[in-house]
Image (cartoon, rainbow, N blue to C red; front, side, top):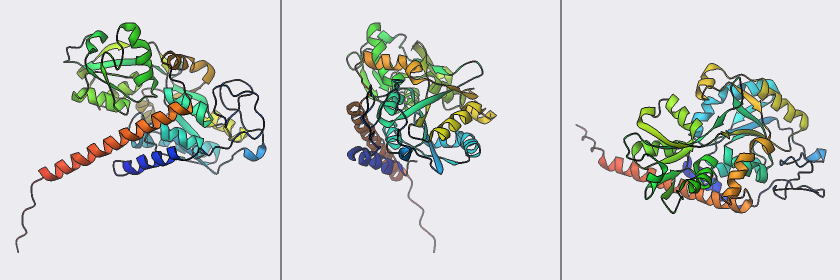
Length: 361
């Protein structure tokens, strides 16, 4: 992944400079709501309608799946392998994993027609719906209900920070500008609790929930608001130890990542994919990796993502093209900074390495 990261960043920059290529609605549209001009919402369910013209419905021979890059994309490629093998058998179509290194790249991949099924994190789900024609249909969960998560603000266990008020003047990691749990929710909730991001403390974008957790663990950040499900999975995998942290604040629950279809798949295929997801039960290893979840529950975007949209409204962060372009630039700049840091670290390691002993003739 490190080797190909610069190429991935270049790809995001290239896509940001190109006109989006999704097929526009050719017939007159009576209602779009918050959707981009390429889509229509005549039934007012807040997601894109399927194209009216049969010629615009897609029936790909290979299905492409991607999962939100809240953690290492290569890690998810392994974890979701059993699901992809099942989908290949269940749908009769080869299903492959596509690694994305940013939320912007994932949304753009669905918008351009290169992605058919995707798991989007909570905040970017709304960008995917409005700008890429994504139709959320499932949320992972357990036997009783679908999974939710809380925003938890973590500090090191040995820190003298005890409450949110103690974060004034500190260095706090937010994940990315579009993240619900890692940025928007704190900006919506903290001011009412007497703490205003960017005013009372310095916001540093880490680029991901796992990076925020690891940064707090290493002492790079004084605190970080992160999604509880990601935090708990990292502890479960042994990446960090729970006793090294304290949670100083947590929110009410939010829906976790959505699983969505491209709006223009042939209806019979779309329905088949939905049913395959609902019938699937996670094998033991996948259940362990997914925090104990073992199945997918039906999801309704208008209902289940209402709290997420309310947070965005509270901080005046619309899920539109202008906001998406701004986030794309931020993600690209963050990726470039990480690449530069990796190169500097590699150069330092090479300079510090002992010289090789001369060969004896």
